Figure 1 (spheres, one colour):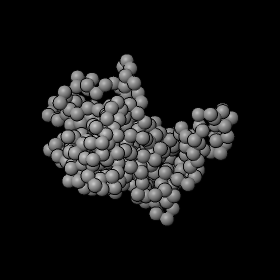
Figure 2 (cartoon, helix red, strand yellow):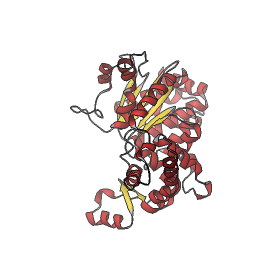
Figure 3 (tube, rainbow, N blue to C red):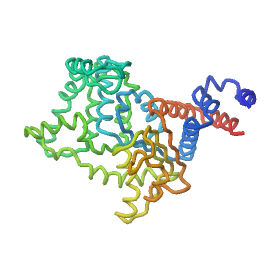
Length: 351
């Protein structure tokens, strides 16, 4: 079988489609199979003219997932996003303060006094990397605060991500420390990508904003609420789901995923209007199935909530998204660059 597979690979495929070929050739069982099948179903939806909505939990921006997400946005592989406030702001931090991050590869062996030393160095640890307080949080604060104050004076109200869209496009390129081609927030802002940030209060800049509300310098009303984010989805979802429909690609769990996926049953049962269910579902998570946990719920549970149907392609990859998502996205970028060649290679591995 291995010899057949090697021989069936067209000449030059490894060079033109290195990631796609790698996945097709190597990924056959367990989580590898789920990764391959999820990637192929994603590609088939895009080929049919469908769209994909991403839900990103955790601290994926600090983990530099933007290296893969940014080109995917530019290539038309991602058409909307739901994010934690942390992911939103941390993409911006990577652009303006990348050189000041300090990685801690041996973080599992840190002692309490080691973390205290990082605190004293004004470094905020996120697993094996750190966000620099002054070069990231406080530098961005100087840019966004005048925007908040102006909105307070004028009585204008905006969505949380719209402030960050403005901030990241206002920063002069000469002060970039990260590669702008690897900043997903910059790519999203330039594309005016539909975004929701449920629970944005639970983030560093949510805290910073709250402090200015407390001192009376800013009005809480200038940031539109989570309820208004849901009502925006009432308008966004029908447009995304036109034609072949829109899929749901989820990293992690929690509010970043649970909030947007609920727009379908809310349209159907609360607004009493027609809505397509999601046309695809994939979750990359290390959460195991558990009692009452959304993060660990199996996809077919969503059928009972009218989010998916029994015909919906469903995938769960129990792995680290920082490993799996770049593989899937880079294979898809290869497919998008040469659809005919990619499909020919896929067909050879399907025989």
